[in-house]
Amino acid sequence: MTSRRKEPCFLLEELLGFIPSNEELYQLALLHKSSMVKDEKGNILCNERLEFLGDAIWEAVVSDVLYEKFTLAGEGFLTKTRSKIVKRETLNKLAVEMGLDKQMNVSVHFKTHNLNIYGNALEALMGAIYLDKGYSACKKFFENVVLKKYLDLTKLTKEESNYKSKLVEWAQKERKKLEFRLKSCRKVDCCNNIFCSQVLVSGEVVGEGEGYSKRESEQKAAEEALVFVESESYQIAHADLEEEVNK
Image (cartoon, rainbow, N blue to C red; front, side, top):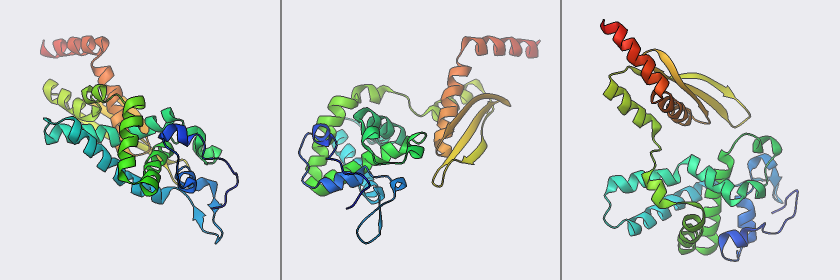
């Protein structure tokens, strides 16, 4: 594989906890398509195929570890916990904390605004480990590196990450009309759109959020809305309003 820059296998040996046998696999895992690297035949190389493979390996490894760790937990708990670990926001955060954002071969334009490329690279890295060392190495990497250094599993299981679901429950309890509205969708480059969603309670905008998918923008809008509707000022204002209505 040819590249615009020749580098060692970054600091991956320290991160992975083992010496890679095939360094090119790991270089490919950290190669974003924006870099326009080509092989000897002129084919464009990037980490998308490894990302596809790594996505499946991540889910399998996480399922395996959770099944072994929480021996008495039901399917619902295991599924919910797994979704928190494999979701895009978690992968993006993990990748940055591991320093993959500083090791990627990616154009400056993409680096400035799209955190998803780092989460994608982490999935691709898992794909590289699988091809280089096999499934057992992938599981060891998740247990010995991800869980021990970067992810507090106990804390994660207690977190409420589905803000939209929590907001829906609040609206039902308070008998409020809840609406999610897509405010805008703008193209930021050849590969990405930014979605902006709003949350309305009884016709009032109470939250707004942006993301690289409609779902992500709705979750961020719901998170902002929850902070607002649970605030003391909102509670007082709407208590006074209800009192006026009931007079």
